[in-house]
Length: 400
Image (cartoon, rainbow, N blue to C red):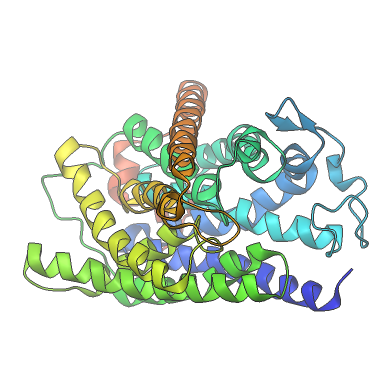
């Protein structure tokens, strides 16, 4: 056990936990005022629900003994054998409990990301059912495939901190969800204006701050690799803000504060799979391109006609996919991409993206369909018009 590494990852785990309340504010500011509490609650509840699912079964399915490259065994069911020492820990420099809780925070935020796609129009109970099963059936297998000894990691796919495990998986589920739930009442006929952009910028700042734990912590040690991931994370986000605002100004006439917040998140998403594999200068290129690519991704929903309320698919889906692919170009630390003479890495990255989208979308679609049939996903029209704060929680975000 390494005391410095242990201290560092304890802090990183707390930083990743802080991202979920940050996401709650980021999303909450973008919806209408009658839905602010319900939207925030859809993220905040994951700290409770997913943490328990993860401790009981999700961690074991993710990091238990490999079964056919597909799923982990039940070695660590109910945290059996997960103790204060390094015995059986996937990181032999860290207490097993610390590795478990660090990974728990990744599991918490991932289904929270999904909720942005169907914000303002899904019943709270339906979300709880979906999220519990989704962590078991989608997140845990993906985590095992990439980080737990499964087939994708063995195949050589590079995903430093969750481009596939977190961002593509959540975006695939988000796309399935918004297609099945359908469009918000009045979508395309009336304006849906963010009610509190300062809240959204505050949330974006919290996400940026927490993302250092997300990416630098994925080095699993207080070392030079963590420092590199910290620097690449920051520079990619900074460059993405500039890239997003450039194309936004060219396309819409003016740069916006919402664009700056969205651009920052786009850059953070894009660098996530690459953070520990690329140099700082490469991260600037990745981030700048990510800001522009994700701006275009947000425009896709009007072209294809789906209602992704808060642009989960355009930012996390396209940004995560872009980041994974360009990792296959720019990787030069611990692995080599196309630009460093290894053309096969690019193809491996593309294959991993296709497999992630196909599996996560398919299973998520089936889950949403089953829940809709037996429980119902959407509130009544009257409840939706009144707002989800009142219909789901009997509260109001603001007193007039």
